[in-house]
Length: 573
Image 1 (cartoon, rainbow, N blue to C red):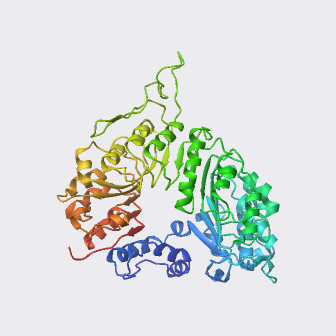
Image 2: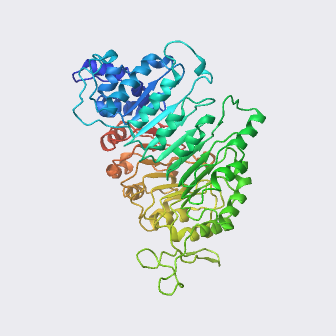
Image 3: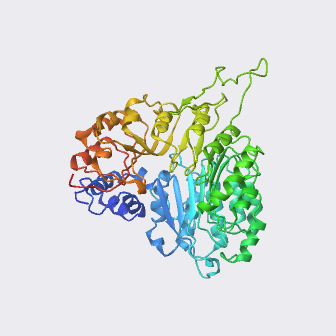
């Protein structure tokens, strides 16, 4: 990597280099092969990975011909105290080594290391493993990439599918106290998850997120799957392909059968993200998944085609406004609709919860502290004035990318600025720079902010930003012909919780003029961002930057959590 390793423990280094996580980690840094910035970041991060805790934090086990990349059973058990996120990938023939490894892990963790070390295959397996210290448990489990749909028919040693299903269920049970997230990806046709697995999921007390992406649910497992969802959790559904055996995707008859057989999910699911359904029409997605959840708090609905979004926009608006179908909804993300500014006003009002005074039952609503809630009034440059009636602010997330969001919708959203944590106004032509500046100087609890462009004059002549807890910024800053970079860096320096700083331009609006973009160089004011020590991602795509060694060394020194840089460098400016 261009430098020497000046510490002891060559064996530890050899073991570390053999793990795929090293290659996975390094791949996050590679943007341009000849980019000095990327190379120096790789070189810096390389030395930070040779401690056990971060190296084993995310561990991948392979079930296919790539199983030779797995750590040995002894190594895995020895470092399992550091494994918090386990990924089981490339499911093919279930080799014997994988069976033995999962057996050893579930046995050791189920008994906190107090196993009989002198019996059978366990003899010598636990030698040198510390069992006196508390056993760290998994926080997340991912099972993905079923390589062949008919893998269960492969015979021979090491293909015990029932045994593998039992071990996956045991893996869930022995981590039941801490498992918060389960992700299942690309398990098509007959999934390798038996009924016992879903029953184990149903018993998890702290499960917060269940993500199914292009998965199949065996017919005999549907009831157990429903039990697993029968809790107030966040459910992410990205294209369930089938719920019965021998399903072949792409056949019209089978597609109709999917639409008929898709089970109704439990009504107490609180957060749903739906996207990527190929065999389920948007109308049935609405009927079977969304309309029945009257207690839903977050709806993130993303259709495959923008045309489908426009077709479903009016149906969803009527359901929200006229039928009041989701009375407890606090977050809505429905991109690329054709909602106008007036449509969005009615939708925002349908999500509001007006409160009356406790004494008379009428009059202005009160906030939780007994004070009148925030009322946002805006004056347009024309003769019209936009205002909104006072109401209780309860909207926490609002994403209407590609809609007609304008001044009226912003005024209606104003009473919710105290509770708003996520706002996405990308590709909204009517969401102007002054409107985005108003959000930043008013929404004090904002965590994620995404827009198209905010200009330097609006920032400088506006009030200070109050959203000091912002963690994700996605908005281009237009500096104009007479840029004042230092003052803009000073504003950004107030966002001390920032993890993602994305200053990229929209592809269709990219103007490769150096004077119009924020210059990320030290002599222009980059040093003011020294306190943004939580930054993990820096993006500047579509802008002209000319950072050199000094800027890179400064980033490595002051941003220890930096993990990804995306954008092209220009050497001659």
